[in-house]
Length: 83
Image (cartoon, rainbow, N blue to C red; front, side):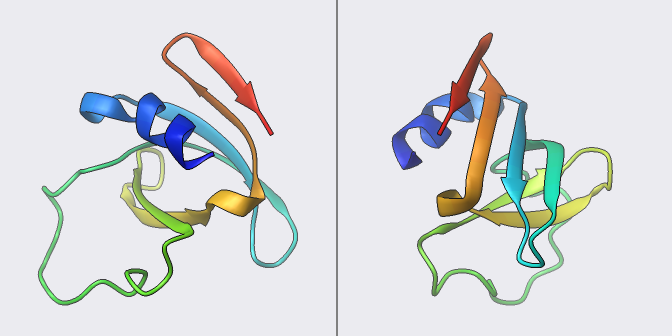
């Protein structure tokens, strides 16, 4: 799954990710990786867990993360990847 995520988000592309949240509910978000415009400094709170992927949620206009083990579907590069 990590290879697919890296492929879909390559070169700052936008993707739609559907995953199961920590509380058990399903969430879909349009997001990008490697957005640094709104960073304010400090340290990463997800760096300790390699299964968490940090992204910038375009609708919420904020940084979010998701667990690669809980991804249901990723739409990007004109393709749909399902787990």
